[in-house]
Length: 622
Image 1 (tube, rainbow, N blue to C red):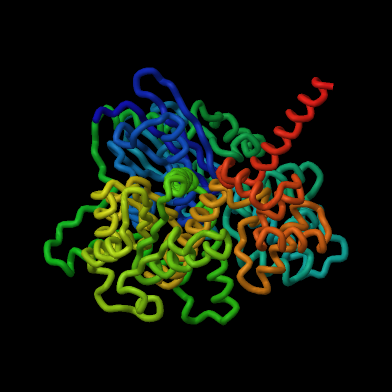
Image 2: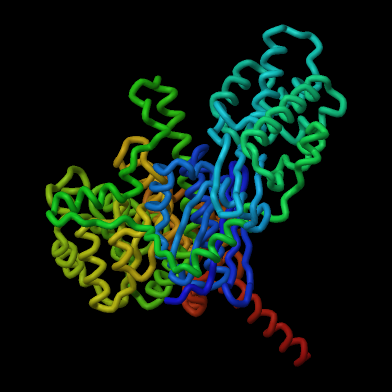
């Protein structure tokens, strides 16, 4: 496929910018996301980049195979992190290069011509591009050891002003200290908690305000003066003996230039282009050269065990989480806080899957309307989650226990204990589906956190063979399972707290998605009125009480009125509400609901419309 588009991405510690551009027409699509620094927060960076790329491809309606991509990312000088990111990005791009953002800044600053660039953002780095395209770099060692002249370091030093003044027990704190204290906490515990969790971007947020305070506060003036000296030193380290334009770029460039000494002010200018411009320029060169850089690692091993090891090595869920390497020496509270921090990635990962989840819901709603079923299929934790979601549907929505069914490798025994070898039995899934008379009217959702489970693959292939719609739910991008389904849902939550324990973040993400599939499908099938579960099956005392409350809430009636209506309608909340709101009896209510596809709101509106028409006819006759 021809390369028709280039994609340039500039990712720093605070924000990420992307531009997708047609090679010939120049038609551009722009978007942005949060931080994508590979050093500060790899998982957050991955989520930001995946979301940004998805949105841009969707905006332009472009296939990844048509796109040459260059990313300039903070922290991409670390090739280990770059390798991890390549593994995470499962798009089959025509070509892909991932550089440190210093390089893309270098090419953008003077639009590809010789230049020295001093990038001053959340981090800092100096870069020199000679006429012959030779490159040299200075600084950029990362926070807090390096990054002198950066926003993070300036903010860090401002925080130190507060801490020093607290230690000195000053009654009258400086304006800078007072400002920082309003941002990070007034008590010792609040400050310590902030310091423990703070990332470079959190410190960098303070930098612009420090420049403002420098107009009136001696402490801020001192901080900015030292910041300017750090930048001057970085300039010297970068240009050495070269005679080239010196360009300041980044969020602090303008503010910093005013505080440099006269000789340095005369040397420096503001950028002609940005890091994003540089990424696009390099992407255009990449597209012209047709340099192919695969985003997936090749598997060359041939024996079964080596192949499996290679597959595991390529899985996000099997990576070791750098945030939890010391978890075995943490206190109970620290372990729990660590678990909670990692769980925060889950809803963000699920959010970027709303598109394919929507597609799956539409499939399920269509199947329900034709009398078809939703079938979940999985092994281990994935299978149990499917069963858990399926068994909740009858009491919640008054559907048959056959309408949403969960199948697990190894049968019912596997719900309580592992069944050896069951997940590797592809034919077992075929047998299980045949046993429930699976047909083309049904929808199959194959659940596999790893994305490689043979039982799930076998089931999806069988479902396809009988003409049914299929959905995969996995947490590893570009997985084998996804190749066997029409719709692929893949919330990428990153490495687990305990390596490979996919019952943690992966399991949580799967549960959220399954909740969404059934809840949205049932709502779209008429199982709610406003946000009330009007089809609740009152099968026990708690649900009896809930049915009464639902009727009261939907109609604003008293408890006695709700009870009377429920008794008349066989304790069917939907019919009871319709009776109270319209006055129709049970049989009329059933007919009206049937005519409106089970939707209570439509039934009420249809009755009101009919009554209005009748009244108008009577008025005319009179």
